[in-house]
Image (cartoon, rainbow, N blue to C red; front, side, top):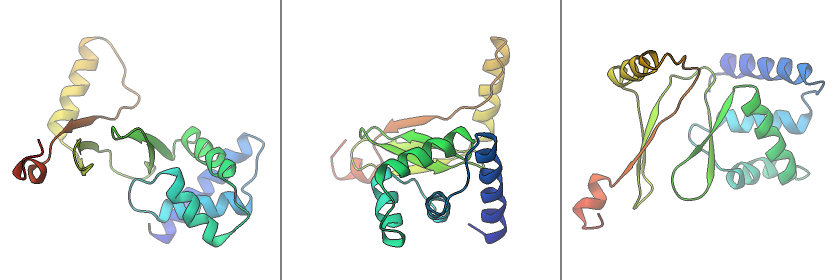
Length: 151
């Protein structure tokens, strides 16, 4: 992530923390910075391993609490890809996208389809429903897995 955007998002998080009567501790900043540098979906174990290399005193509970705060701040969202694990991705300052997930190999394709987004808005309007957020995961079998007879 570009430094300006990282700084802006960090300031937003710092302001959010202040509204919760919390502060951006050194450990929270390390977790935030490393999470935002990671350009993909990340699970807690991976984030823990990355941050532990920087500060050996960061505990797993601190990772969980910080991720929870990032979700509450609207910077991060939790996603599930059908393997029983929770993954996290940055959403602040990023273009909305949905996911195609292969149930065989776990391949994850991010996509955005304006026609699909418009259809979702139309469906919401039809039912007099105001959308505030959504994410969609479509599960199936990728071309590679089908070609080797796994699906």
